[in-house]
Image (tube, rainbow, N blue to C red):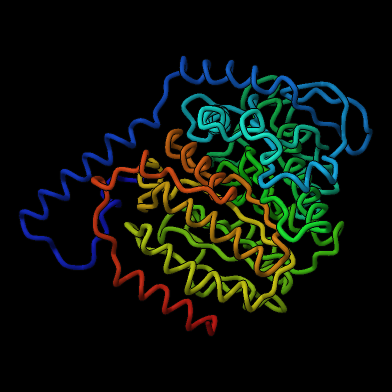
Amino acid sequence: MPLSHLMELQTFRPPSFAGTMVFLVRNQVQQRKNHCRFSANTMLSEHRFYKHLLSGRKCVSKNTKTSVSCSYSTEQNDTLPSINQLSDARVIYAVAAALGHNKESHPESSARVPAIVKALEKMELTPKFRGSDILELQNFNLASVDDIASVHAKAYVSGLEKAMDQASEKGLILIEGSGPTYATSTTFHESLVAAGAGLALVDSVVAASKNQLDPPTAFALIRPPGHHAIPKGPMGFCVFGNVAIAARHAQRVHGLKRVFIIDFDVHHGNGTNDAFLDDPDIFFLSTHQDGSYPGTGKFDEIGIGAGEGATLNLPLPGGSGDTAMRAVFDEVIVPCAQRFKPDIILVSAGYDGHVLDPLASLQFTTGTYYMLASNIKQLAKDLCGGRCVFFLEGGYNLDSLSYSVADSFRAFLGEPSLAAEFDDPAILYEEPSTRVKQAIQRVKHIHSL
């Protein structure tokens, strides 16, 4: 995304002094965004650190119940946490870093999840420091091919599995034509691990909700991300639609008929959108930067057939920030969820709307993500027995990504935000408030909110 797109300040032209200030702010933003660029040595260091941290994690195949060669263990153990463990926990998370799914200098790299895990350790937001309040789900099944096929065409799933031989020979292949989505020899397997982590968290949260009014909020720290993956294939760094697969799982396995999906990634979740276009029982709500990749998610995309009205897209103008997102939550997300009456809330949590992220030009801050996490947790408590699972999507500045996820954990715990220790108000500029209000009013009119 060109840096010039960062400044969408109303329609008036600023006077010369203001123009000078805008130039200085732009330079500050660019300097901080450049921190997301990391060398091969940095990535190797993170990789080694993470392999050490993950030495005890396990995953097994649903189909065979035998050991599989995961990137972090080959031991067998497919037990979920006990009811006592779940009842004590306030946050539950699972990690699937896909260390073998990596392309040099690609923004969606194997350094992303390790950076988050390292930050959680540094900020003492792991079971080691918090005891039973935070539970890491270390033993879970891979998603089955049938799980994936609940959203994706079987021809795509089998084709991707077969393509692993080619990836083994060449080291890396592109699987989206000329697009940016790549695969290595481990991509198919590690994508099953990622989807399986999400399904296990749904299982755990649902189990906990049967015995307590305030079950733990869950977070799937997984990759490859999923919300761009369309039913017929991969797209936009995404291989399998992790959130969409979890939604179908919640319906099929747990009888949770009405699923509310919130996607606050900076890019439109077109894959999730397309998977449920005609389904009235899955409400998909996406906020994203207007005009950003992949160019979908217009106001008038509201679903089709029986699903008309169960898709809400709200493209926000570049430069939208914390004030805009707070208004969106209060005026759009809350009334939509209240009217829909969900049985569970799933969240495509993309952190690439952060002002420091290199791939977009919104002005979200770590504090914005704390607000979203806190408010969504409360919304789930009010509407669906606290059943809520977050899924990692985008976020490509390793610092803003890891700090923002850590602050989301604090929100789940009900602890004060530490965003002020990371966010720098000096690099923010005036939000396009008039255009934001117009966008909110337009979507409210379309959906009769």
